[in-house]
Image (cartoon, rainbow, N blue to C red; front, side):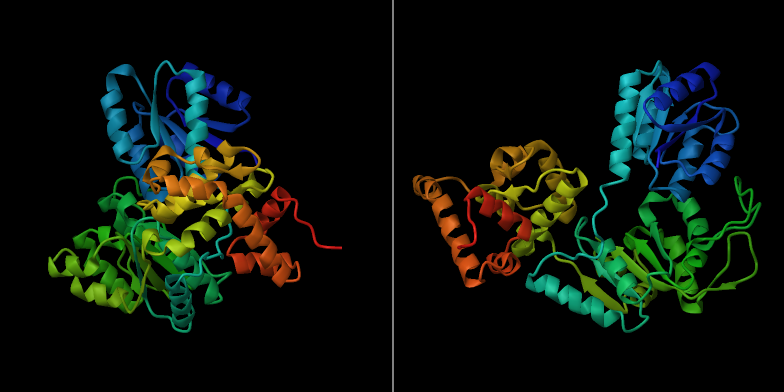
Length: 440
C-alpha cells in the first residue's frame, strides 16, 4: 500500500511544490489550504505522516499539533516554518512534532525527514506473541499472565521504560481469548491535560472549541475489550477522581453531556514511576491506586536478567534479516560478550533498535564487534593478555561444543540449538562456517 502524506500549507505555490516533490518520490499526497480543512481530510483519509505550516488561517500548525496529540499521537507531524519563527518550531517539537523544515524547503532534506519520521513511527513489525527469554523472571511473568487471564481484574504493569509493558498488556488481551475484542491504548503523557478527559470519555458537539461533532472516547471504543492506560503515573491529579468514578461505576459521561453510558472494559495500566511513593506524596489518589492495582506484574530491567539478552538479540536479528530479505546472520562470540556486558539503560527497546541497525550495517555474514555501536564496545570487558590468548582458541572451542551438541542430539538441529542456548538459524550459520555435516 502506498504511503500517504497529508500536507497543510496556505501558500498555493509552496503547497504545489511539496505535492510535486513527494509524489515524485512515490508517496500518495493530499493537500489542504488550512488546518481546519486539513483535519477534515485527516479524519477521512488517515495519512501515515503529516506536514503542516505553522502560520495558517482558520487553524494554525500549533492547533493542528494539539489535535494530533489528542487523536493521532502515533502519526508523525513535521512543521514548516519561516526563518523568523524557528523558535516556535522548536517549541512545537517539545510538544511532540517530529521535526521542522525552514522555508524555502530543501527538497532533499524534505524527503530525508519524511523517511526518518515514517521509520520512527512504524518500526518493523515483529511477532507480538513472542515473549522471548527463559530467565527466572520471564518464567514468572508468563505464569502471572496466565493466572490473571482467568479473571477480569484490573492489572498494573510496572517497570522501566523499554521493558515491554505494552507487550504484557497485549499478551493478556490475547491469552484471555480477546483476539476479536478491542484493544485501545491511551498514552497519558502524550495528550494535553485539557484534552485527555475528552480522549478517555468522549465529548458532545459544542462541548468546547473545536468539538464540531459527537465523539466516542477510549472507554466506549474499548467496550468488550481492554483499555490500556500507558504511563498512568502521568495522569493529571484533577482527572483522577473522574477515572475512578468511571472504573467503579463501569459507566462514562462524555464531556458536555448529561447521560451516563454503560461500558464493560478491563483496565490494564502501566507506569515507569513508583506509584506507591506518589500516593504517599499525595500526587496520586490512594483509592484509584488500589482500584487499578488489583493484580501487579513487575518487569525487571534487562540488566537484571542477563540470561535473556542474547536470546532477545538473536530473535530480533533473525526477524530483521527476514524483513530486509538478507541472509541469516549470527552473532560472533566476542560481539555476544559485549552485548551481555552492556547495561542496556534503554532496555529491550534499545536492544531491538541496536539489532536493526546492526543488521543493516553488518551486511551478510557474522555480527562482529566493529558492527556494534561504540558505546557498547566501550562498556565491554577490558581485554587482558590471557583473554587475548584464549580468544585465539575460541573458534576451536566453539566448533567442539557444536559438534558435541549435534552428536548428542543425533544431528537434530532444533535439539542441538536448544542445548547450546542459541537459535536454529545461528546454529545453521555456525555449521556452514565450520563446514559441519552429518556423518555418512
